Length: 292
Ligand SMILES: [Zn+2]
Image (cartoon, rainbow, N blue to C red; front, side, top):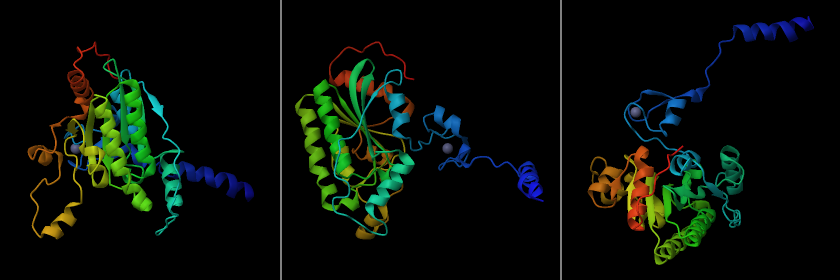
């Protein structure tokens, strides 16, 4: 009997059971609702192959597409106090951090700092990770921007920031708001060193990040369709009691109203950044090595 229940039955079950496809192999485009195969999406840098809708992309994939030959150095964020206010809402803040890190990776935070060559020239890049607690800015992200600015000055390299954030990290209260002036000063130091500071606004860039380092670029590039604003559409609508125009706070709307200098397709981002930094640093265009 044991042999039957323990050995034969599971074998039979396995034979009969329908093999379910892993859920994440296919993804529905939120814009055109066509099904997208994960490998095709990876190859297209998370741009829908049917309608060109730009889905969110993780920092590693973005950095790989940005730097020459896909090679770059990662710079771990400086150590910062964890949960200085011992904050707790429905969950402890430390538990929320642990959960996010279990998903994203140990010591992960909402910002990734990297350096390498873009078009043959040293560049420092800081990329927000929306997948980590909505890309919210706390002390760690603030310190990361400060570090990226110092690195840029040290290397006499342009600083490129890819913003994506829901705003300040409310679990760090006033300490997260303090990152707004701190990152503003960090950006100012880069500018005083005569180095380009370029912001690429990606979906979504809102709140305290919009109100600080994301709106201080020498040039503001936005990805198509990205949501860019300070407070949410519903809050504004309820405050002014007026219906907002279609496409409000989208990259195209912000471009039409002068908040954004250019809208650039993700596939053209690398060459655009090379061209802009060459122009700003008045250097002759280098022989451009291919991206990975
Ligand atoms: Zn689509």
